[in-house]
Image (cartoon, rainbow, N blue to C red):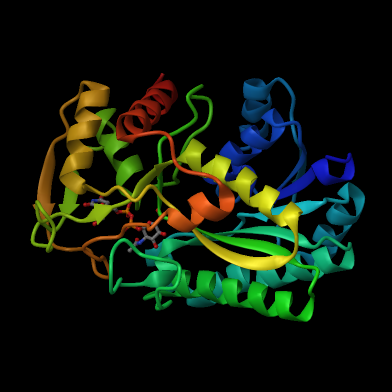
Length: 338
Ligand code: UD1
């Protein structure tokens, strides 16, 4: 690797997946610039990342919708590649405030890509989501499955993927990977970084950890009448450190040559909500009280990755299992409760 190819800008680098990816990048010897508005991240995340690795990233506190500030930051850092996580991610909020979601997720991405083009940066890894598939016609889901997102959050991810593809057609030097994440879970084994949602968690794993630690009384299981083995929703949970490692593999792919790829990042293994409750009870030694409630509008029965393209093209596969996800999430949550 040349000096130049070691410089990576990470938008949203103080967030949940961004901070774990920054740790892996620093540990692999990359120089990292975190670009984050800290709208949904704690101020000391970069310090905690530095404490894990023994050296830190540079930090620019700015919003990706602020083109001039972003342009100055990229011109000064001269990244060889950008990993783009920054965005809004709450599905319910996206339904209520679609214009904000399109402004930040789509508008912010276009602003970023324009500034990358300005500085001559042609390598991108984009944080997409399995939500682009909508209600799947088949599981496991291959990348060629139709894209039919069912809410503005998912639409914003699909639109950005489309923009990246169109940019690639116009700019044959572009090397980009749209990574479609399934359900990230767990935390760094150091317990220094992890998921820290503001307010009531929308997602299952952070809700479970908050029940286990006593912050919330009980879990609501959203429906037990799905067409799944125990009637509760089945998902493909992936350890956030495995997911972070997939970004380094995607970066390597962008270094290998131009082209735009869309690749699932999942394990191919599904667990139901009740499987998750039991696994978390074992990891935490705590009983998790739960009640069965109505289905959550917009939820699907089963979401499961076909991870074979990632294995072929990225030479990557998830290595950490459900027990590790639960143990690491629990250690992180307990650390915050002290
Ligand atoms: C959700 C988002 C998806 C996003 C993903 C990120 C929705 C509809 N979808 O997916 O767009 O990409 O998070 O990780 O919000 N569950 C409960 N009780 C809870 C919370 C969840 O029973 O308090 C169940 C859900 O019904 C589902 C499973 O747990 O079966 C996982 O839910 P969640 O963690 O919210 O993820 P997704 O719905 O897959």
